[in-house]
Amino acid sequence: MKKSKKALALGVTLLALGATACAAKDTKSVQSTEATTESAASAGESTAAESKQAEDDKQATAPEQLRVSIESIRSTRERESGGETGMGSQDRFYEYPNWAMLPTVPDGATAALTKALDAYADTQQKALEAYAAAHQNSAEDDSLLNRYAGDVRLTRSDSNYLSFVRGTDSYSADAEGYTYDSKTGERVLLTQIVRDEKQFDSAVDQVTQEIGMTELAALAKEGFPANKLVWALGNEGLELYLPKSDGNYVMYIRVVLSYESFPDLFTDRVKARPAQYAAVLVPNQQAYIDGKRIHVSAPSGQSGSFTVEVDNKEHTFKKSEESGDLLSLVFVKTTEGDFLYCEFVGDIADDSQLVAVNMADMSENTELGTPGLCTGFDLQRVTDPATLFLNARLDTLSTLTASLPVSVGQGGKLEVQGSYQYLGVTELHTKQALTLSLVKNGKESGETVELPADTKLFFYAGDGKSYVDFRLEDDRVVRVHIASDENGSDGSLWKVEGKYYDKDVFSGMRYAG
Picture 1 (cartoon, rainbow, N blue to C red):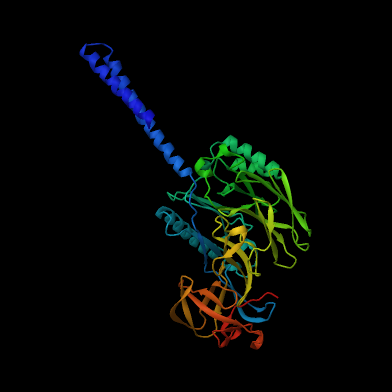
Picture 2 (cartoon, rainbow, N blue to C red):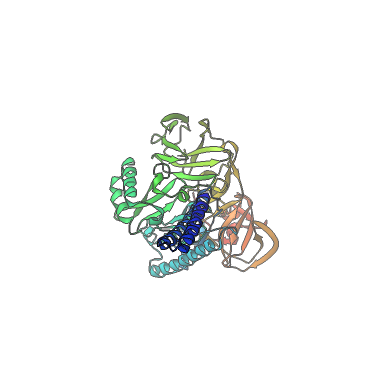
């Protein structure tokens, strides 16, 4: 601002000199007036430029996390079957092959961003119905090719940008990336994020060479100028999801152009991260995050050790002798410290082992304080250390995968923050009329509802032992109280509402053997 005031003062001086010269009928008065005009314009431009720079600097400071939730919606195409399912017979089994996950933002988000996600939800609902109609005659076909790619992977959620990809975990060519400006709600193009195409091409060449997949480079470089790439902003860097097909299915290779490795490729606002954040790193590849280069070396198969290399210094850690391959890596930065969570294949089916490495002193911790039902992180929602989720397999009225909300506490321990949550649209039907408690904000409201026979109940939440919450078709939530009963009639496993056996009350239950 001081420079602008000097320029303005200079303009006033020139104006005064011009007036004196005009009185003396100096022929240079016209030139003086022109100089005055140019000087004033220059001062205005300088002020505008400084104002814009100040706004950019403000936006480049650490943004705030947005606590994004994810709900699921379904299409009208329902599959129904019956028969043996591992632990016994069932009357009917219900499945929706076409469903989608919808990110939603809290009340504190801008109205523009909320409106943008409402529009996304509307688009997904219409896409589900269109896909269901097109594949209605293939209702009995269990092929992945006839399932709508509605899964969502949330990669960044802060007050600068909200970013996620859809369909990259579904072996479908239908994948898309969505990045929104959190302030304006506008959908952002990749060509608006990346500053220079030649630098982008060079970065892609470098990273694909590092990971030994140079054949992907041409695809990335061809798709960039036309904005045809599946991409998202993550907390490590720009994430490209590059398709690779075997002729039947499409899988997506995640390639990360990190902010640390290519700082000139991005604006300061893009590179700015919240004070606390989390990021999914790519296993068996070098990661560049928080000013560090991190690489984890873990032998394939069963082994009792693995190596974490940080900035060319190696550290060896122990893991279970029975555990196997490296499954996932999650980097977390909190006020308590920086932690690297390494997940390995466990010693039994559907099991895994989670080891936390404290990046401050490079110590390890396997006692993370989580329930035994939980395994590794739910990688579809890893952005905020206060709202992470662990995968769990529950056997409550069905064998299903659920997610347990946790936060990262002192020493990297994981603190439980609520009940298990079910994603997807797995459904039961009531065989008889039931009176159940209504649930609001995760608690029983004191009200009850009468449900007739053949009511659809969609798994929603639960504690894994005493209750399961279900969402009704009208979006109300009801609670079913349960108690384990191994001596139940006809192979029932649970007593429902203290007086019914589960098989007398529900159809559609499925248990893994």
